[in-house]
Length: 168
Image (tube, rainbow, N blue to C red):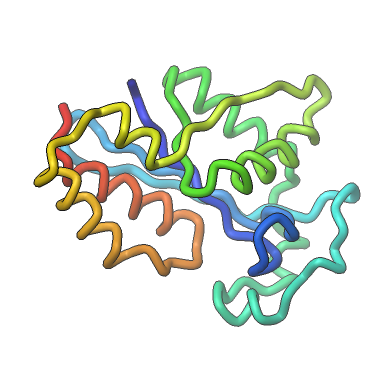
């Protein structure tokens, strides 16, 4: 399994309400490094821009006006498809239901909409049958980094935490 960690920053702090404003990826490399990438996402005409929370903005620090200059949602969707196709990876997210909803919002912007499956971070760890000490290392690391409100940092936190399990 080749996990690539995917995270979103959203327009609202409430789950299942907002739309994606930033997407972040991270993956652990064979040389031990972790690579990450993110982009802001311009709101789609199909999304309700009234679901912009000033409370969320204070948390993540992303200004609405910055989103108007960001790449289109279809561009972010193409990037996701290219990563999945090129790396033959499994996308790993924290909140499977909400993150899959956000992913599908982006994929719906493509002319040939496609489905991409995701698994949760918990499912990934469960599939690895980790020993208790390894699982404790992962959890200890992740607990210290879980309050990150930006997509790239959140994806990287999952990747670094997964690295703590010493899975080769």
